[in-house]
Image (cartoon, rainbow, N blue to C red; front, side):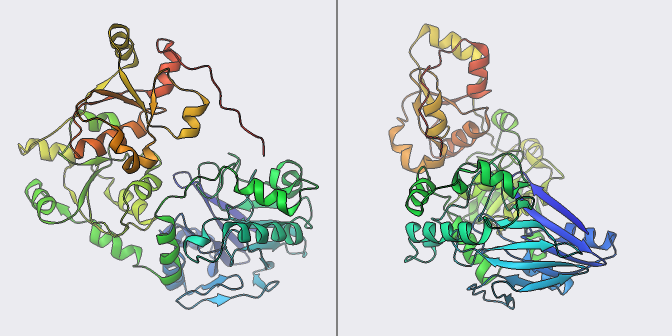
Length: 472
């Protein structure tokens, strides 16, 4: 038997490959399915099942393409109502993969169809729990997402279901079972996830706040709902894509991998409603870019930030990439349902510049330069980190304008004032600056290195206030 976790850091997502005696199953696959197919081919195995723990909100699963290309059967837990051919399993139903067995455990709470899959080895011993978004390492799934799709499912009702699922279905299982969750730290599907991506169930019973002994249902509901922030707006749209279906990844790539000369790219930008998305490194972008383009660097948490900041999942997109990375970018966009890339600039920004086209830039300064300026005059400092980051520690006199809520907070920024903008390290501040630059704010200056560089330099006074937190 082989169990392999295939972890994707950008989405903090874990898919799983299970193989036994020439048969294989995939649990919660990503949109691009060729890696799973190739893995099975190397093992001389046939993929016979695709198990979905629930209708995902934070990414578009690859279940449809994988089933089409391999003939595998798609499996959901009880109450799921997909708009395509799939087997909706009974609670407790078992599926054979070579000489091992997977048992369905219906665990409503994160969503009503949420299910865990219990893996039994060749001898019938319980060895692994693929817990989806029901149980994370250090946390449990947030119970406020399904109500975005089904209004009567309040977060309180879902939290109550989650408590029952955990206490009646999961906690009675053996302590030595390995928990394999769908997400780790950085995912918006929970609030307190560990950086570890597996653990024993026994250790989780001892350390996970939501599984502690004596916790009542009322206490659980209160604690699991405390501290939840609004989920990204693309979440319910991804849920619907996972329920109803979507274009094949092959079609998405074919549509997006349309190379354009600078003239053709300029015409497309002027004649369509497409946004220009520049995925280069933030500091490279700052030195020169196509006017009105938005920078979201592909080497950061790229897809979730696109999903957070581009409200229309059907938005047409024109890409500026480092040459050779276009397919990677289109694939990562498709993971969160942004399937409408209509082309990319052949040769990247250098081709645009060499063609004599108009360019723009954003001024970026070091922390040393910022300190010199602030010693001479009062400055307007914008901290675009999350409120929780700002509350923990921030530069004295900095104003918090979180990137997550840029559209809500834009009105508090005066176009006539000069602002110095920073985040933790420089990734989010350039996103922020590029968005506002495209909307006519031309007095924003980026602070390279962000808050981390400020602290390390010791030249910018940092608040000694640490926001008190409750250990849940």
